[in-house]
Amino acid sequence: MQFDSFSDFIAMGGYGFYVWLSFGTCALILLCILLNSLRDTKRIMASVEQQIIREERIKKAKQEQTS
Amino acid sequence: MWKWLHPYAKAERAYQLCNTLLPYFAVVTVITMIVGWVWGLGFAPADYQQKDSYRIIFIHVPSAILSMGAYSSMAIAAIVALVWQLRNAELAVIAIAPVGACITAIALITGAAWGKPMWGAWWVWDARLTSELILLFLYLGVLSLYHAFEDKKSAGRAASILAIVGVINLPIIHYSVEWWNTLHQGATITKLDTKAIDPSMFWPLMVNILAFAAFVGTVTLIRLKNEILQREKHRPWVRALLNKG
Amino acid sequence: MTRQHSYWQLFSAVFSKDVKLAFRQRAEIVNPILFFLIVISLFPLAIGPEPGLLARMAPGIIWVAALLSTMLGLDKLFRDDYNDGSLEQLIASSYPLSLSVLGKVAAHWVVTGLPLVLMTPLFALLLNLESQSLLATVLTLLLGTPLLSFIGAIGAGLTVGLQKGGILMSLLVLPLYIPVLIFATSAIDTSSMSLDYSGQLAILGAMLVIAIISAPIAISSALKVSVS
View 1: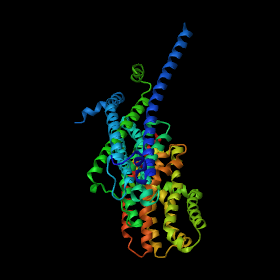
View 2 (view 1 turned 45 degrees about the vertical axis):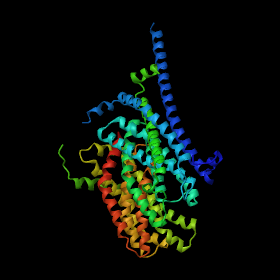
View 3 (view 1 turned 90 degrees about the vertical axis):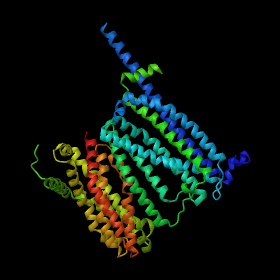
View 4 (view 1 turned 120 degrees about the horizontal axis):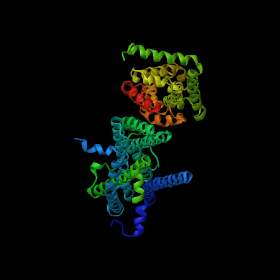
């Protein structure tokens, strides 16, 4: 470990603001794009489900019409 | 020789391939990212001149390298898409673009945050930063063009053409900006030339580069899966997926 | 299908048609030039009329104004033909689309770029450009404006089918213009120091030659995508 204490680690030899700004925004952006992509998957699968439900409903309505 | 690639022109096979590859990419990402960041932040020795602020290199350099790597991959996918008329390749182009744009933004932001303590200014028109900014514009151009089209087939082809035009221009832009910069800024010394880098800093850097590459791969695979699902929404195999999961 | 006409006949037919149409609507030619003049006039108003400062900034101002006014005129390059269906006819014809595209871009340059080149002495006057830079400015505009037309035509081709294609095309095309801007302004700067600027001109010339050869191919693919 290059640092003597945790507060030294946070301070980063005086450059703490810049180092943590960089790592923080990097982590934030990476997390955002990852979560966005995963959320898209859920959204697409949800819309497929919706479509199936809609089609079933239409089919049922048609059957009730003819019967 | 390339016959084994042919099945992957079909959407379903490509989707399955993404699914197979995804766990490996994800695991490698998590491991290398954690190891890389802990090593870089806590265990690599401080630089003689820049002290601890140089640690930003462990995310700045990987993101810069990957921003160009992602653009090249996007361009290769675009060439494949146009030459062999493969829809899956077009989808790959648009899957990579947002990830590449984010990585480029990270490179710019970390570059600025590194520049402030080192050069005293948040932004300097240094050759590399300027080229990186233009690269971001090229990514955003591909994305805006794709989303401006209503018909996604034409959108994919247009985005591919733009990606290829961009990749041809990329070296020209890079060299012209470098040339412009040496003309106007005299001696801007870029520290930490990787050839002369100490092994105790070299290896954490390599791990971080691998981590970022694995991350780009993971998110691209997820996005490619999404694009395939979006296009094949009405197919039975997609519906079968719902029942499975 | 045998071709009745030679390539040159096709090129000159497309070229002369576009030039004739442009001259019928004088506004189309005059507007970009007026825009250029107004933009150039805005700079002294914004940064102060001090001659030394203007002389230093003149190459940059002229070239940024050239970029912007070229882009203004690019939207019309394919849009009229797209709207009345003649673009589809050009694509569907048995003659190579690249050739027709070459004719259209050449016409566009004659109508927007060439006037700029001819009016350079006026701009030099307004911006207090050094006299030895005048030739350099004319030469860079002469080599650079066709280049701007070619690169811009790629953007125009990609966005011609879109509703609000104009601003998007600018976003796509401006990053590609940057090398032209860098070398052109550098050539003018170098000439103002009475140094040899043939290197920059050579690079501009090389870029132009490459653009003449390869841009029509990109523009043709783009048009085929837009019209489909």
